[in-house]
Length: 112
Image (cartoon, rainbow, N blue to C red; front, side, top):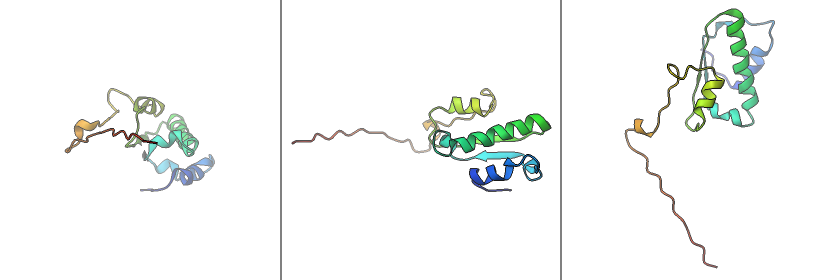
């Protein structure tokens, strides 16, 4: 098991001549995948593209799992990760919570 940040894994896997460590990986878990739309997004995108290219060139199976608590565009991210939306996409909405969440909007009127 290798636990690392996307930036560190990017450095490790960037050299195409040394694939010894990356060839051992069979599961890539990207936590906070919603950071694709943040400063770290290009690094995550490069990692996914590099991993998918490795799968295609070596015909080895590497599962990519993207995790996020706040991901409104999960279908687009799933498409980017090449997830089969019928069998490989898992979306847990509020119905899975044992205690339902309540959402309230409270307006405050300012008197000047």
